Image (tube, rainbow, N blue to C red; front, side):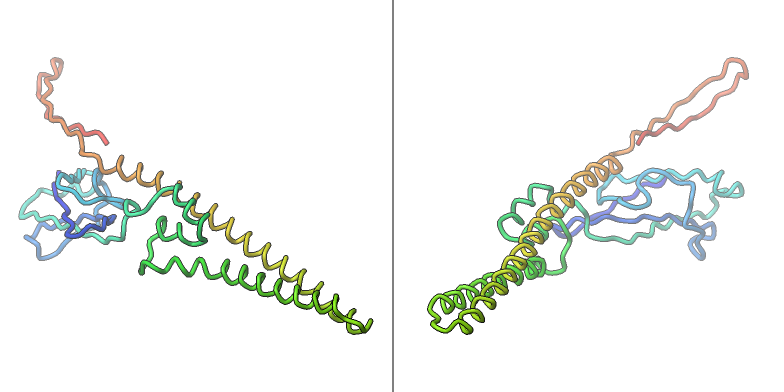
Length: 226
């Protein structure tokens, strides 16, 4: 068993990918990453004081004797899902497209969610502008005294009105898509958080001394649960 701990110095939570190496020459060279390991190792490891790696060294290397042994724990890390919100943030995107994205995904800058608002805003803004132009041309059509001029204004108004409806449909579709996307991402975050909590539970490790009456010998056993 190799116990270790991870401490974080700020409020941001991270997930670690832990790998284990060992040395039998007092750290001059290391072997690994090791494969026959269990416990708080691999991906999705969280910071904490009671981390333990259980290594089946006989499977890994039958010639391992522990002389001059040293272990090295190597880790990479990334921001954790623990920092992110759940499906309730879809309500934020229902108020303003993109707002909920900043709560359920990791962004380098706090206002990067505005980039998600831009497509819907551009489409809906263009729809309003096109509708205004359509209304103006329709008013000109109503005030025309010349048939040819009236037909031209009517055609422009009709074309602009159809364009306004198309842009509005696209903008609203993107808005609804963003709400659904945030909801699904939030649900996935909740599921991953449960998985993280389960993996990072403190290991239940028990030592036991058993006596075999038939063979008349004793065995020291190690049991651990995840």
